[in-house]
Image 1 (cartoon, rainbow over the protein chains, first blue to last red):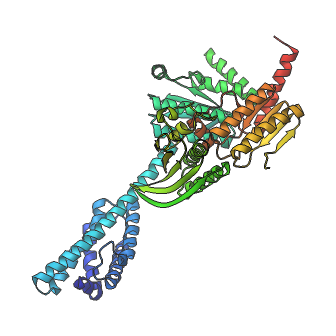
Image 2 (image 1 turned 90 degrees about the vertical axis):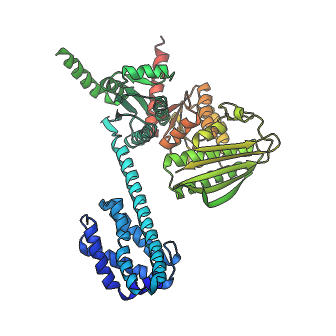
Image 3 (image 1 turned 90 degrees about the horizontal axis):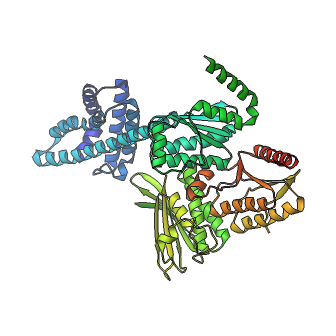
Length: 290
Length: 134
Length: 128
C-alpha cells in the first residue's frame, strides 16, 4: 500500500480538491457548507495519512487507525442528527475511491502492482465505509430509542385534578411496555404531589388484555402499599366483559363508570376537600336541571 | 455473551446477605439500571442469598456484568453444597416452604428477574442463576 | 447489640427504619415493639420505611407480623412512606400486605391514626 501513503503525503491538496468536487456533486449538503465538508475531508485524509505512515498495511481495525475510526464515528453521529440518509453516509467514504484509483493508475509500475494497490485500497476504503455506516446506524437507533422514550412520557400525562387527587387519562392501545412506564410514572407522581387518590381513566382505551389488566391491578396494589387509593374509571362494556371472561378479580378495586363519578368519590375520600365536594355536587345537580 | 467483570462473595451469615445486597446495588448503579430494575434485582438477590444461607447451609454468590447483542445485564449465581432440592417445580410454587419462610423466595426471585435457571438434586447442592437486563 | 429506636409521640409510637436491616435486627424490632406497646399503652404505631430501599419477603413478613401483633393488642399500625420501586417489587414478589394500613408520609399516617381513634371513641360512646 506504499503508493497510497505516497499519494496522501505528496498529493494531498490535489486529491482533496478532486474528492471534494465529487462529494459536493454527489450528495446533498443538508445545510452543511462546502467549507465544512472540505474541512472534514481534509481532516480525514490527514488522519488517514498519519495512520498509514505509522503502519503501512493498517486496515480499519488496526491500532494505528484509532483516530480515523473515532473521527468517522463523530462525523456519522453528527450527520445522523442532521438527517442524512444511509446512502449519503456510504458515499462519504466510497467516493474516495475514484480520485484515489486515478492517482494509483498514474503511479503504478505495471498491472501487478496496480491491481495489488487497488485491491488494498479498496479493502481499506470499504472497511472505513462500513465502520462509518455502522456508527451511523447505531446513532440512528439511539435516536429512535430516545424518541420512543419521549413518546412514552408524552403519552402518560398524569394531571393533578385537585389537592391530593391525581388523574391519569389513558388513551390508545395499552401494551405491556407502555403500561409499565405509565404505572411507574403514576406512582412517582403520587409521591411528588402527596396525592392520596389516583384516578386511572381508561375511557380512551379500546381493549385490555390479560397482561395489561394484571399490570393495572399490580399498580393499584402498589399504590395501596404506598398509602394511596386508586379508582379505575371509564371501563367500557366490552372491557368489563373481557375482564370477567379472563377471570381477573377486580373485587378489591374501586371502579366508577365515569371520570366525574370517580372524581366525586375522590373528593369524598380526601375529606380535606369538603368545600370542593360541596361545590362539585351543587354544580352537578344544577347541570341535571337542564 | 461477554463478561466484563466478576466478583465472588461468601454467604455465611445474615450480615453477608446485607453485604450482597449492597454489592449488587452498587453494581446495578454502575451499569445504570432504572430504579425499579435495580430494586427488583437487589430484592431477588436478597431472597436467593437468604435461601443459600438458610436452606443450603451457606455458600457463595458470583456477580457478573454481562454483555450480549448490545445490551448490558447483571448475572448472579448462587451456589451451595446443601441438601439440594428433590422437587424443583414444587419449590418454585408460591407458598411452599420446608422452613419457616413464606415460600416466596424462589418463585419471587424468578418473577423479579429476566432469566432464571436452577440446578439441584438431593445431596448435590443447589445452584440458582438469574440475569436481569438493563 | 444494634437496635432500631422506638420513639414515643403522645399516644403513638414512631419507628423510623433507617438502616439496611439484617434478619435478626428485623426480628428484634418485632419483639421490642410488642413490649413497648404494652409498656406505654400506646394507641397507634407509625412504621416509617421511607428510607428503606428494599423490602424483601422477610422484611415484608416482619411488617405484616408487626401489624398483626399490634392488632391483637388493640393498636392500629400504619406503614408510611413506602417508595414506588419498593412497592412495585413487593407486589411482583407476591406480597400485598393485606390488612396493613398505609399512608404516604408520617403526617398523613398520624392523621389516619387520629381518625381511627376518633371513630373508636365515638363507637364506644354510641354503640349501634
